[in-house]
Length: 380
Image 1 (cartoon, rainbow, N blue to C red):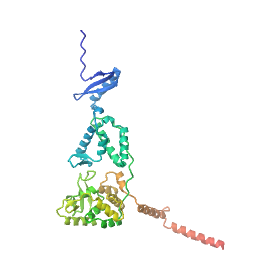
Image 2 (spheres, helix red, strand yellow; image 1 turned 45 degrees about the vertical axis):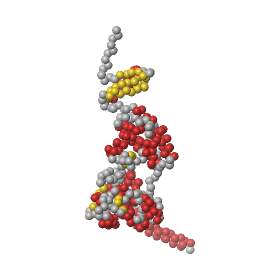
Image 3 (tube, helix red, strand yellow; image 1 turned 180 degrees about the horizontal axis):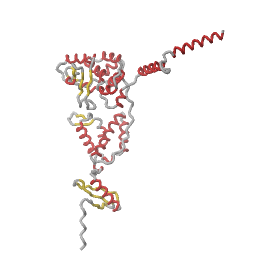
Image 4 (cartoon, rainbow, N blue to C red; image 1 turned 60 degrees about the horizontal axis):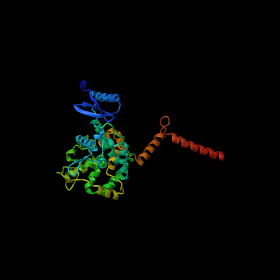
């Protein structure tokens, strides 16, 4: 009789053959993990298995085979992340089900795919398809960012190990539209009466359109002349306060008198205002500025704060910009700014000559005049 095989020591795992390839089995939290060593040499396979067991002992969770992870699995994790963190791109459809904005095209293309098959080459083909559909580079980048987030969550959850490279596209340069005060007054006359207070709010504060339309009277202190935006109602989910004065304060007082029982500050026939795109476009066209967007008022608000001498830190707190890089995109420099800068530089240089240069130009001109006199005398 052959001697019985010695019992394998607990925790050492085991190797077994599948065809000519050695596979390893080890345990993580009581669950058996089977993985191909991709080796035909038993000694190399054993070293591979020992590395895996070492990772478990170090507390490193083994990744679930990407071959079994699908796009749908990663999408579920993304949706759960958005719901847990209440991200702004999470919306609710007419059927009541949650969805993520800009994800539909990714769903249409990658539904049914395995995570392992979503390679950089596949992503480039998706980009080409969207470009053929005339999608803007910025729109495509938003979709790629969502897909990249799926892979990042997969890595965090230990379900995905390899993350493909995402070839992000160069986006169009930021818009440089803004509204000067003369243009503001002209546009105000062309807008319907119910939109004029909204225009004033955007022009004087630089608030986002969504923040303005969702503004409640509970967030407005007319006596203290202050607007307090609650956390969760702003784009960056942080609260902020905005002081209101002058024309804007008076317009808000009038609105309060007109609609004393309204929940929202800006209403039409007692109801909160939704989209006003057509009314805006028509008024802007009549005012001679057909390309003007409401969001240009945000750029205008930032620019006016800086030109008024408000410190940038305070201006960023008012506008709600968290980073200087984004803030600078809204701090538009106009042709008038450049002319003013050139004029100030000219005045400055005219006063400089080892101190005050106020007489330098006059002396220079006097010298020119004396030179001309001497030239005349010489000719005579």
